[in-house]
Length: 412
Image (cartoon, rainbow, N blue to C red; front, side, top):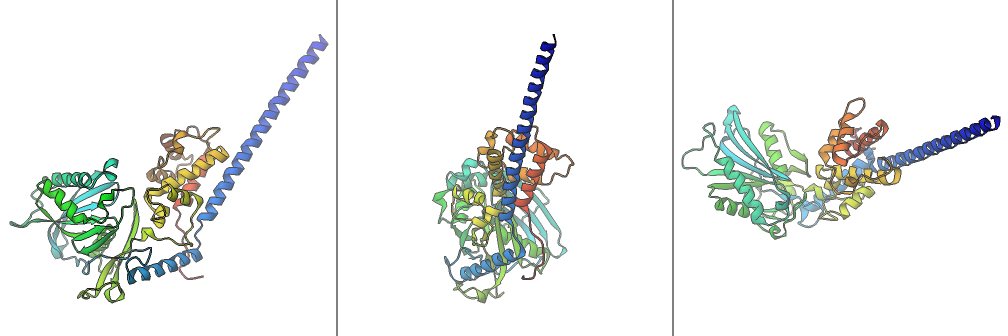
């Protein structure tokens, strides 16, 4: 009987030791995986760092490219496109005007009644999502879709918006892709960005394509001005504040425009405008410099994009790509540090499966237990029951990707 008891005790002790060993090994593996995760995080943060000194280097490099782009076409990564806009709004404009804004995965149509010096402004807007297949199909298909939506919007014009008798409706066309303008209301497409790829449109006049589509819809409307969205933003800012001289877009893509002295544009060969000024569309999304904080994730994203080697600045800061950068970091963490357990979520291997709005929602989660992060990881990646420390790591990644370094504006 005693021997049996001793045997049982020995078996129990051996089992307990085995269980304890398994627990220790599990904790050691868990600790090792977490150490690996933290190492990847710290490496990423270090490579993304933008201290003030580096920012000044980037600014200096951009200034050099700006001067080269103003000197000659093709002389710089920055196209520094002449917009033919030499007069900006004064705030006293009056009348009914339409605007079409095509700049990404959706477009907007706007009608506005300006009241002159009283600044009485009435407006209505409509937004439509561009089906993905139209972004890579043909020019007729894309512009017919746009003209159809525009015609529908015009047909809903009410009595609050009055067009003087005998006047044709005028449209301002905001086309947010690189265009070489030949006049205020004409310009040829240089290249597509932001996921569009319609080869037959390269070198074609975008106003002409829209005009033909409007004619096919029986729409009596004239394109009075072709502007980039950044130029349009600058005009909108000047309408409200006469001291506005520049505008920046940070959306699906990124760009900047500013007011330049006409005599400081060597490639301008026409008569100098009476205003002595010209709005320049920088197309700074194509800026690239050795001073930019490019990581391995940025480089692989660029290599696998529709336009490798182009739009580098845009790919590291604009809304189309931030979520994708986060996905690539999380994929590495899942593979090398088992961030989400002993499997890699299949969706995490799909390019652009993690959209920037999802990243933004997680980044702004202020709840104590980060429930928004937990919910978004489940919705976007199918990951459930994430530990709080994992959710905190995800938020920290979002912060690194989105961070704007603030500090002294004086040179070091």
